[in-house]
Image (tube, rainbow, N blue to C red):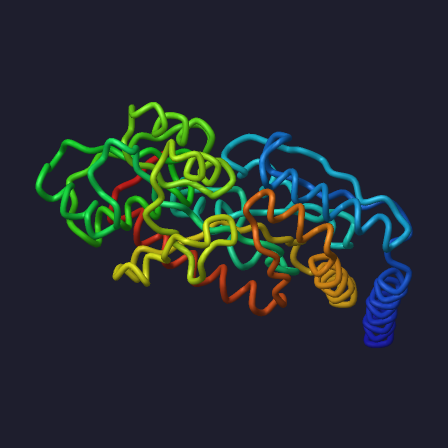
Length: 325
């Protein structure tokens, strides 16, 4: 019996070693077949566009097709839940935005476990948010706007691209941190939110530069500030909220690449190196600028720290505002 047990243990150890060797060999050959890159939303949005830019360059550089699969629904939860359960072999990648860190608190229950179900590759790019007002609003600075809202409680509303989006959460940070009586009006996209502000239906708007900057340049909206740490290349004359005297009103929108937990480290390192190279290419930087994004190409460790901080920050806002989907 002891001999049989010893043999079984030895066989188990050999099997585990062979599995490990097989994974190492697979990582060294990676990729040897097409790679799926999942977008948790429909086609046409910034996550989809940036993913397609990356996938094309990865295909060219690594010699195998990286193809995009749109898997929308549930605010991104459907795709994140499915990818979390897929094989950690490097052949399924997932591009995420702040919903990855927001949804666990926003929905209460999601089909993935934050920080456990995924390994992070790189925060690829980010963009700021722009605080804009309709030209009829008598405010030319954030300080003016705060004073105006405080002197007219309940009169003003702000538009965002939707419940739980960065625009909404930064707008709620604005409301909560300054004790303002202001109403949130969610839309289904940044374009619709900006359009409502241009029409004067919602006099204030928190949205990304891509739809907002052209309206500011054409003076259909007045830009007051951007909510990032640095000024935006799309609107270089606008101060940051910190420069305007409101450092707590901060937030951005970002895009990052992740994989199922347990993906070989060699594959993660390879993909990270490729993203760093791709994000430095002039044509990619030009495409990102059109979308209002800045290249980042962070390390996996930097991305993990960013995600952890964002999770805690937005969870606090969601609970304080009692935001429900």
